[in-house]
Length: 376
Image 1: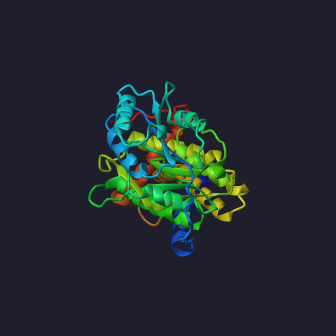
Image 2 (image 1 turned 90 degrees about the vertical axis):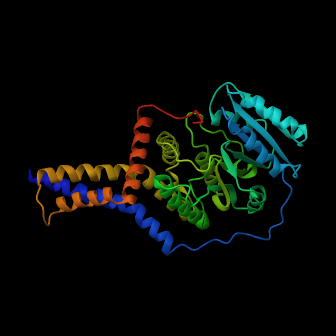
């Protein structure tokens, strides 16, 4: 029995160390990392741009999305628009066509493509085979992007080392709280900070742009989601930066509703798979900064959830074998769990852990989220 207790002690030490890795990384960004300056005076070249709007049953958003997009790109004749309809059965394609025909955009600048095989990555892959542009931009149908985003993207794309630029979801005080507000605030700060250092592996498909000269020809993995992470890693493998620019912001047209548990699981699964498929960058990347951010992302989204779960299980088992109240590690472990449950931040982290573990388990049994069904 003594050997079993020693094993429990050793396991608790290991789990505790693993849990602390993302925390140490977070503090290292706050204390040690310098900022990279953003080039402000680069001449903006008129490059051919293609804007792709993937849609699947977006009748609730198609008009307001196209209205905002047309207003932004209309003065720029070098920007073309493609609506990629993924087998919608609610009239999205017909509504989009009607709106575009009645708009002031020249007919030669827009196109609607329909795909019977569902899947966002399927649609994007098919569109890219027909696109001849120097910059490609994708944006989700339910995202209201802040005005001026096109100019910011064009400016950042003039920087030689940048391959991909993305935005962040707006934090609107009073409109969002709970887990989503907590996660968004922490995640936004982390990704902006990583972008200042070099690159971030966690981008946003709601508004994402890349230079075709940097990424070359590629195909997204159609058996998984996380198109944003996939594109970001392609850029980083080519030696280019993938960044978040905090001046480009977006929100849901519905005013930042709470992301459902299922949506969170879907996103966590795609990101986790993308990270694992690119885990070799922790060792093979010539840039130490990139090794660092990929290493932390794998720890945060893949290892941390399981280390946390095992810490909980080990604490309960250990205390059940030695239920002594006092100066024992078993008792302190149980107290730490109670404190986590009692604090709002602790409950938010616990929810995030649960989301990741469920996402991983579903991936292991073959349940994937390659198709997207809007919850509207």
